[in-house]
Amino acid sequence: MKLTYLILFSLIAAFSHASDPSQLQDFCVADPNSPIVVNGKVCKNPMMARPEDFFFSGLDKPGNTSNPLGSMVTAVNVQNISGLNTLGISLARIDFAPWGLNPPHIHPRATEILVVLEGCLYVGFVTSNPENRLFTKKLYKGDVFVFPQGLIHFQQNVGKEGAVAIAGLSSQNPGVITIANAVFGAKPPVSDDLLAKAFQVDKKVIDELQSAFWMDNNN
Image 1: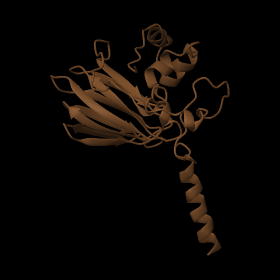
Image 2: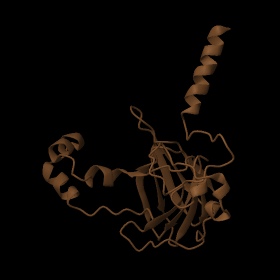
Image 3: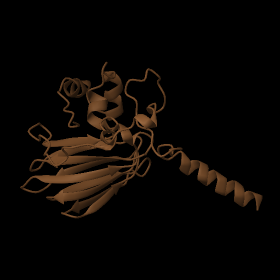
Image 4: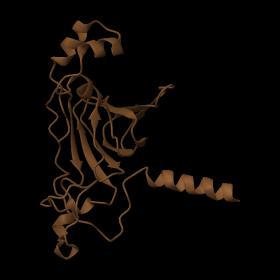
């Protein structure tokens, strides 16, 4: 019996660290003027909260996809809705030009669930080492797909018309690391000797990649 309780406690403890901490009050509107640095954002006096702290307008407006990737992500998180602080949730609108791509990336702090509103998307994610198994699916209007937290994933419009999707994320501030940008666009740059060995290519290839412009499609 003691062993059963120990296993149960371990599972609960592990789950409790799998996403943002749960709030201990109705809400904790972020105070952008606080000089205190914490893991998250400091609450302002709840008596000072206003409806605007829980409001965002403009998600009906298409993002500008006239860029090299042909996509634009419009995030709605604690940065633009301060009332999301401690609530462990956010969302994003993703617009795609024909054949536009939301390139391989990860969200270090969130699982993502995506629903297609318009168009046809080819989506997928890759599992961790050593399997590196690829899961892919072609999605149409009304289809939903889940990308597990921390795994590399992508979306591409495979239609001749524009596409739109909405993504829900299990963090107030999920973060995004675009793989190519992080590896080849780091500042200061990662050693080209290191990357040449890691990717098993000539150093000239790495130098060319590091000198390229790496587009950020997150608005």
